[in-house]
Image (cartoon, rainbow over all chains, first blue to last red; front, side):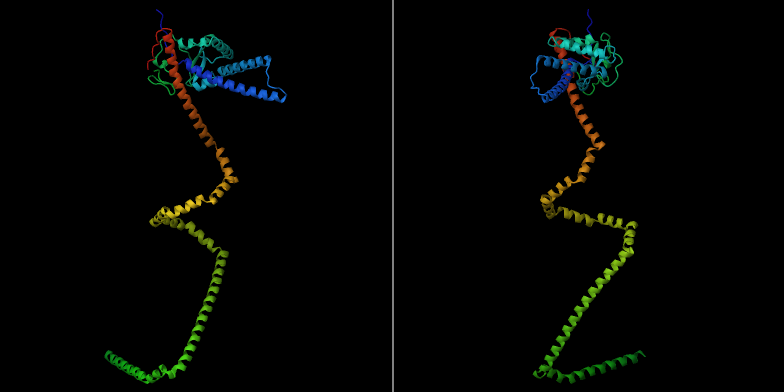
Length: 185
Length: 215
């Protein structure tokens, strides 16, 4: 008989993470659009008419990917939180409860793009995994947990029975739910 | 002795009464003459003389009043000058203020029921309300307000307020509080949505539901 894995509410779910990524995408694209407009404005001073060739489009796409890679990698490796994560109150940790390294964050970014390629199928495991990990989390050995501002010293083993306190969202005591986290209906 | 004095007084009164009657009898012909046409010329001269005397008296009174007014104001002015030069007035005012008498006077006036009644009456007066309304609607207030807003002092005050660390801290705190409220609301909804999405996925995959957390 296969043991049913325990659910750990301390791990953030798909919807929360999707909202956080959406906020980050808004920030990334907003800055990219403003930067692109400024570049176009400066180029217009030198007689550029606004028509973009294939090379320029490829360069722009590469710049966008580099910029978004820099955004996610730097935020994840420095604080474990992008602005979107911060707003949603979640944080990315290494499997070993450490803060993720730059290389790990870089891998996680490319794995996230990889998970998004097959119409987002790489994110479906978040719905079924015991630690709510997607493909990119498995590749980069990371988890996403609710952030209550306290330092996480260990990531709970999903196959070990957890106490009710450990199952609660961050900041909660047994029998309570912290502010901002409604109980599961 | 007392009896002798009383007797003397009675005899004196009797003598005086007899004298007055005798004088009246003696003056009777003069009175008849005075009232008769024969006395008319004399009466007119006496009336003219009395009128002249009255005019002189009035003029004398007017001159005297003017002189008294002029000399009085001159003396008062000189006295005022001397007071201000000597510093006596300042000294008196200083003593009054330092003695606390002025404070007591102000306190008594403020706490007096009559003052309160006066204020209540004045405030409740419809005429005052009309007056205030007219003043507020007047162009004077608009002009004064515009001048006040355009003045350098007002700009300095506004500058000081906007640069006030306390005000900035309060605004930042309020803004952060509002953002935090919004974030908490969004987190609550996504938290429930996470669980709902997982239940839906498990139904699709025909897997058993995860146990609900014990709380």
